[in-house]
Image (cartoon, rainbow, N blue to C red; front, top):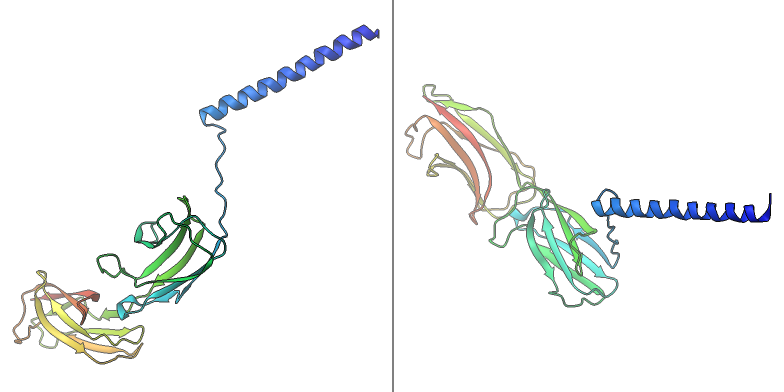
Length: 251
């Protein structure tokens, strides 16, 4: 084949290769603009803080708190610590907040008592604490803590029959940890009015010791109550309800 012919073929092949590459680049750019091939941004993991929580499970209704210890390994521009429930809702905002001020390396601690800013104790369940470093909106620095139920309780009947003199409801309960705050077990009606106090204690109670209380459908004056639904509730001396259930009363 003549040399001139070879040169022409090489030039044509080169032009075709450039055209194909150019078309591929154009199509990729077009798709990216439409969002079809838009890359997903990857946030870098932050390893500038180590952390732990103790105890991992605690009883805020018994006055316990969780201590979160964290070590800043290298200087960070700012730092915030939030606690969230299992649905991702913030229940304790800014336990730690440097307000856009740098945080120097060192060891730090903060406590959470299981309550919100208004002093309400959150219920039993799993919670997550998360550190946000700098301008982060997503946190890779997270840990798990749990609020445990202070009290376990049950009732042996759904309804008391006022026509039967021996019909009673027996409430069995125990505390899941040593409890020294004092409490009252009482019956209240649907309007929240106290019908009768069943049990109370002002001294320390050991964990896992079964306690029983009975109610025969009568008020403090031994007068039969009206048929309907009633609530038995456990209230600490500090005024916090730590457990409740329903008892029906039939005529």
